[in-house]
Image (cartoon, rainbow, N blue to C red; front, side, top):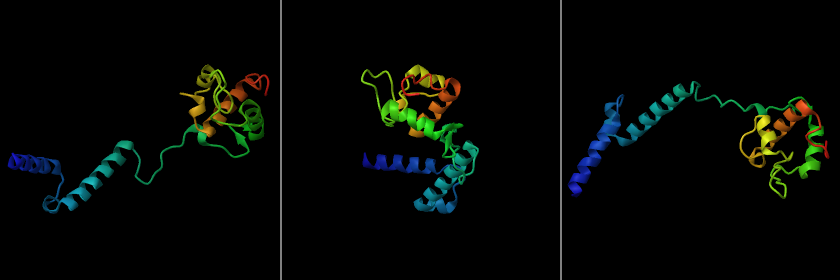
Length: 146
């Protein structure tokens, strides 16, 4: 049985060499692994449509000039957040209905493009989605804190 297992492992090794394998790779497993990794990296770059040296695009909510978020003064958003949650992006109301730094309910969160649980979203995304809501409806979504 051990001889058969060795034969199977050898056959799998030969099959895994694949197209484009050089004679040096066939003779030296380390050369094979390096060439295989280079081929995979090239294929991944081609399938992604970008070079290996490029970064993935940033989400729309990640952009901010520091003083404003989506055109809304950061001070305005911070005042709302301080009142709603003490500025805690992981805050959840006692009944679980309102979540995150701006105490979104799930319907409102979805209406500004959010997905999942607002309290689990990155703080920058919560800021961005609150700015979108503020641009649409002013302070009315936060009747006590707006």
